Length: 268
Ligand code: PGA
Image (cartoon, rainbow, N blue to C red; front, side, top):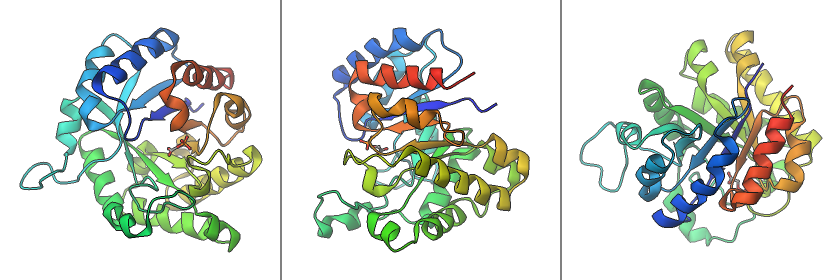
């Protein structure tokens, strides 16, 4: 039985005080719940403050990105040991925004290079995170152009191979994967639940091809891309979807709590 995860990706939002106020509201809804794992991913500047606020709660903390070297002359970067120190147990890697695959978003083409994550850097980050016991949430997904060209599976296969290719079977089993179709992120265009389920099943079969059946069966695969209180129930009811990576809707307590409740309702 896979334990669902609901992870809130706050992206570049919220001051420390706003972040503290948000988790203060979410906390009572999850403190006693064991059926669903709840994770919040604040910006770096709010990690330590959120960690303080979440002492004695079941909510876990994730970072939105990391650099793979443990320390040194890497101005502007944050290492895995620093994330541990700030209380993180999860870290998002390979998000389409850090990969510069902005799809239908409006960011200027010329600026996308600033985010140029590759499958190789994703793989280095995953290796570094696993070394320190932080669980990577690996994001994969196709743009609308890739979907329309019938390339959804091949794009995802390539992203999975690049990110997980150097891990052994046991390590692969500890990673969390988020299927995030780029065209669904921040657009309100949620992927149809059955289609999201189909692609998550494809991801599981890919992992099975590179690891053992048990790791593939235990692997938690989240869906992300315009998850809201209104559609979370249908998405989480799908057998291959083990929770969600939630952006915009995680910034508002009442809606995020409803999403958590939908995940709870999907467990037997
Ligand atoms: P969204 O973002 O829920 O705002 O679409 C999801 C994500 O980018 O992880």
